[in-house]
Length: 396
Ligand code: ADP
Ligand code: MG
Image 1 (cartoon, rainbow, N blue to C red):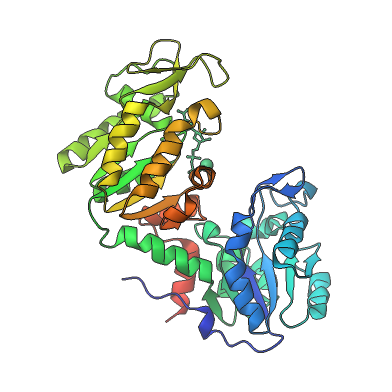
Image 2: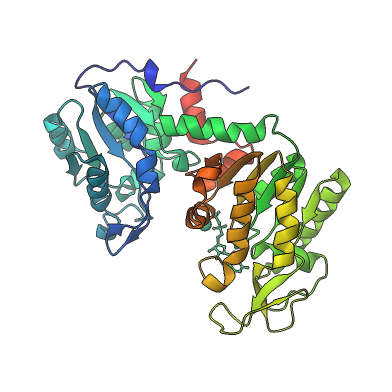
């Protein structure tokens, strides 16, 4: 078993102790405003815990990919504004990430107060885990907390270096909850253990498919990914998205699964169209030339709902169709309903998948909706995430 994570309760904090908290505020922005505040809300329990203990809470995060430069469109200022609105509290925003001005602004923060510092990725040292940048970050607090589950798979300064250079460190409450929930998929999951995999590309998910193929009883493969698998079986796929260079790999995976007695379920009918914007949409069993599959059909939904209904554990990553387009959303919405109805332990991971579940209005019926995309996939794959490793090494 992995070593335990150091907890918030173990931190020595007095009134006015500055605590640097790595959060995942990498939220979608639209016209300069936060379009989805799920990740901000997910950080609230840790923020409130620290405020109640009188800490000065210094929040740091990345947002988008500004590539080591100050890019106004990726400023965390609108995120800080959203946080202030949600918490109904004053939030101090620092226009830089580290440096003297940030430090003197921190002096003005009251015990129990909150400061958000500017996007970590405005500095090149963040991604390169540069020791000097890590130290400057670490110096902002007398304790370091990592509550950024979605960033745990990145060996960046705010995730690894700053933690290593801090006097005391802990996992935040969100990270604790994520690890506890996802651990159940790795250690003795209730059987049958069924995975639902979808999304656009096989290449994004190879590691997790291979790993799940070793641990699951059945895998339902939907989304665009399914067409590469169907092509591997020599089935007609029309003009659906197929990763030609992954067909062999798909073939091998299908063979290995059948040897191990792991059932791979591929769609048996499809919602097809000439393109995503085409007016004519139809349901077919065999995809004709010139048409592409954009969703699983009703027969597939009914078979899969049956498999899901009998599962002891369900892990879902990747929408089974192009759910952003109304005409191709029924499959994903029906799968969300089937997972919601399942009495087993149900977990969803992945940004688009979580958004789909939210849209279905059935979020509360899932046991866990991970806030991590890549991080939750790598976790479920059984990989040791650099951020968690750093936290665990501390607890010896
Ligand atoms: P997640 O973020 O949950 O990990 P992915 O990013 O892997 O999921 O995949 C989501 C994307 O896959 C969505 O944008 C969706 O439109 C796309 N997708 C799913 N099925 C299809 C399909 N049949 N054809 C084209 N795109 C698809
Ligand atoms: Mg995605």
